[in-house]
Each structure stands twice: as structure tokens, then as C-alpha cells.
Image 1 (cartoon, one colour):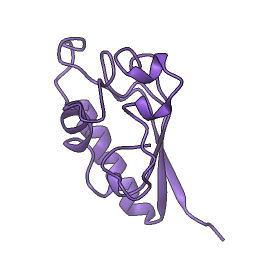
Image 2: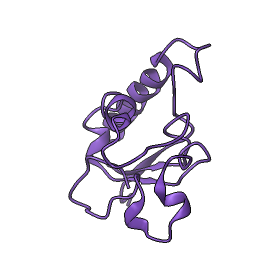
Image 3: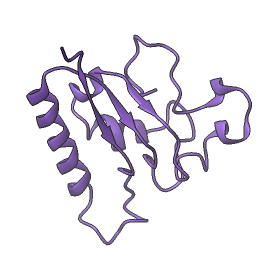
Length: 122
């Protein structure tokens, strides 16, 4: 018996300055919509694996960085954000993140130790 399923996404980051040769966030939102359709079709998605390069061009500065809204919350439906996102940093994610040069994971803009707070992925 199947215990659930999961989705995988990677290199989904976008920035108008860096990626000016594509049509805005259209591609990212198209992929997010397809993920939502698959999520609903499967009906038992337990988590999402995010393989990095999420916040172009240089990552997040903090846990309060406005990119959480513009590049994640406003792109991925609340249903997709209702399950944990298990993430790794890509090379574009750690440029401005204090975590890159710190031994304290509490400094990391993309690390969330509160499993009940799904406002940021893990």
C-alpha cells in the first residue's frame, strides 16, 4: 500500500534583471500551476523536495526578505505550501544568506525549525 507521494522541483528561481530574456514569471507560474494540478490529482502528497537555485540572483538576505512573497508565496498556491518543502541551497541561494559563512544554522534565511510554521520552507 502506498504511504503517500511527493513532488520535486529545482532551479525554479527567476529575477527580472538576470532573466530579462524570458517572459516575466510566466514560466515559473506555469510550472507552479502544473505542480498544483499534480498535487490535487495525486491527493496524497506529503512533502516537496526543492533541489535549489530558488532565489535568483543572490539568495535571501533574511527570513523577512520580501522575495519570500514575490518569488514563493505569490507563485506557489497555498495547497502546495501546506506541506513541508525540504530544500537544499543552490549556488544562487547562498550569496547573500548569512548561513553560507556561519556555523550557526539559526542564521540561515531558508532554514525553518518550526514544523508547524509553513510560511517558509525548510
